[in-house]
Amino acid sequence: MSLKDVLTPAIARTLIIVGGVLAIISALLPWATFTLNEGAYPDKATLQFFDAPFAVSGFRLHTLLVGVAVLVVAFAPLKVRNRVQRALGWGLIGIAVINTLFILGHGGGLGAITAIDGNFAFGGIIAIVAGVLIAVSAGSGTIEPIPHWNTKVPTLVAYAALVVSFVSLLLVVAMMLNAGGQGGVGNPYAGPIFLSLLAFLAGVLGALHGIGLTGWISRLSDDHKWFSVVVLLLVALALPFTEAGTDYWMTTAANIGVYAATAIGLNIVVGLAGLLDLGYVAFLGIGAFVAANFSGAAAAKMGFELPFVVAAIIAAIVAGIFGAVVGSPTLRVRGDYLAIVTLAFGEIFKKSAQNDIGGLTGGANAIPGVPAINWFGLGFDKPLEIAGFKLPSGVLYYVLIIVLVALVMVVFANLKNSRIGRSWIAIREDEDAARAMGIKTGQAKILAFMIGATLAGLAGAVFAHKTSTVAYDSFQFIESVTLLAAVILGGMGSIPGAVLGAALLLVLPEKLREFSDYRLILFGLALVLIMRFRPQGLVPDRHRRAELANEGAEGVPIEELNVADDTPGGKTEVAR
Image (tube, rainbow, N blue to C red; front, side, top):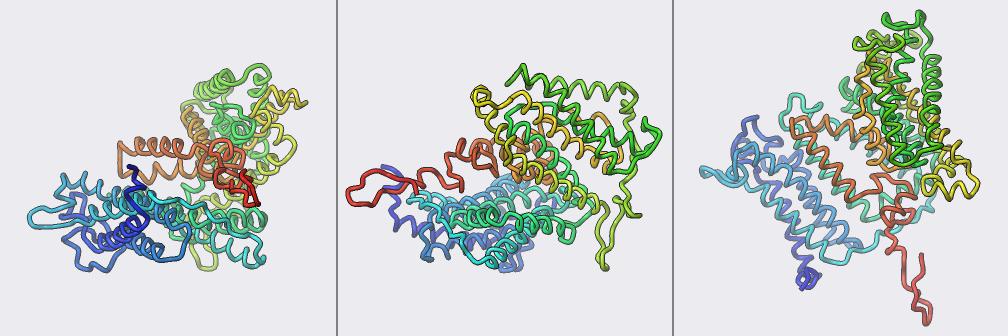
């Protein structure tokens, strides 16, 4: 007897309603019986400070919202009720498990989350039970297909929907960055606060995806590409005006931008052409060292200073030349052998920079004192004030990085949709078949390496001036692995995927500092789980989605695209 036989629709609906009520009750109860060693648990969840049960905030507010949403959906005339409630249930489980386990681990036993010395705190336990009831009961029923919203709406309606969506995304990003403080500084509970928020947002996103809203927004964005690009650019530039507009996060965001631009370049080599490059960070280093030598720094080899734009162009050209050199072996080798060649190039670059061959890298002393970019008397490392609004130092670097990433994205998008882009995709799928179709595979592969290296060299020039010191140990093999992981995690061949992958790989370790020695283990485990359950990446392109996820172009599973033929006597199935 299966779970579906036991949980009839009526029983499952009753259990879901009970789960929603329990979720609300858990939000109004204490979660910790006593104050932990690091201090009272956040959001007044400790019994000692539980003086206002209805003044919920933080993870308790998220738990309350999930419970209310589950009850609303249970009584709403929704066809996708089970899909939405299942997503909310899993989000609630994440919130409850994260906070309960942290209190349990730091409280020294079950007494911290249940009862001790006459003190009771069952909020976390009840929340876990509620989440399990909701997720299991909703999953036992029929999971309805995701509805397909009509995108043929008035232009003003589409524009308004896109603006609201992107502004909401900005506020969510700012909230995530600011959750728990800056990288755990000054808040011993920054880790669980951030992870709990992540679980809540995952549940909400799953619910919105279940009703078809996210797919509709995605299709609207495709229908109005240029408007979406402009709004996204403005939204990104508005980040310094949010609560995340601090020196710390501007520096982190600029670093993310450098890695994102570099990852997009690597996406050409790996995502489009299918050429595994394990030494790609060397091109970033080449661009950085070239720009540093033309920066006028005291340790620079060149005795003169060039304007940043000129130095950046030279850095991109030099990196592109080295990319063509590294790509030339692709005429003879492929697969694992090519990976070994690129790995060797990365190590050769690192050792050459370490030993200061040619006197261009400074060796162990590096090239310090690279001056900040200065345009029209504005130093990019200085704070900025606009109309009385004080912006943090480094905000101009952030703006420059946003422009750079936008430029790289435009280059990538045009290449992907061009004739050479289709040639790269053909080579990735089957090089022999591509050659048989008349594609000059050798030239195409060398061009992929050259263009990818050029973009990395351009990012390296910005990196040199932003960090003010260029050292060989900034371009280790692990950095190449990180860039490759960003491409695969985000989705090979996907433009927003590379940006999202780079952001996650840089932000998550910072936000998990509270877990000290375990943060890299948790980080690695998260990557493994994502690759297990979403091998196509977080934001895959349509080719990877169809290949690895068995989904159509709009993210709908193939089996949901098949409907019965309702013509008289029809017994076959046809695609919608």
